[in-house]
Length: 301
Image 1 (cartoon, rainbow, N blue to C red):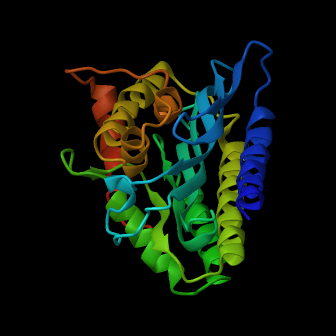
Image 2 (image 1 turned 180 degrees about the vertical axis):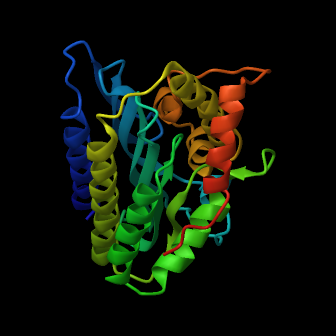
């Protein structure tokens, strides 16, 4: 069962990576494919595209780890579990930082936690994940299409999911010390255990494919847009907000660090190019004013 489940996650990683690789037209892009093993148990594969014609950097990561004590980040808003015989956590995490500021940063994660018995069989499980979009120069048509596709997919499973998961996303991807959201939302769910293991995997696969299809549609619309130096500077400065959230609040980052995960893979979500500035230009302030009006509202459809 474990091997079969791992294959599903590996297939998700391959599907998304192959689609992203096709976006690169430069033969100078740096591609790293790094298979690794975890001393405490488990393995994974980190794939990073960097310094290409399309991506500043992009990571598509797969991991499957074994442990005895669930890290606190895995139990946030959750319940205590008896892991004396161990747990298995597997998943795929995607982060995309395109060069063009007219194309949003995106993030997607799907994961399964399982509790094992003394024979290594699964006795309990729950799933989590979701995806969100972080625009710099927002387009309302893109945002509405992003949410409508999420709703259509989730409605095929349970018509109550979209509203709950979209609200979860808005609440989770929030930067309290800035009093602003990370982006325009998407979906976020955790501790979902109402499906069988097999149906749980099918649900996660549908989430991953919905994310990929929705993001590629935005990319195809915006990739030919020209951008100015001021717009690129704005993107690099706003990426600082992304770094703040990931390093301070993100539970996935915390889980990786608390479970003695592979540091370089965990931090591959950070943008490779980012700016910090105390004084902001008039152009920055103008673009930020427009952006904040968009990200600090609900886009539920």
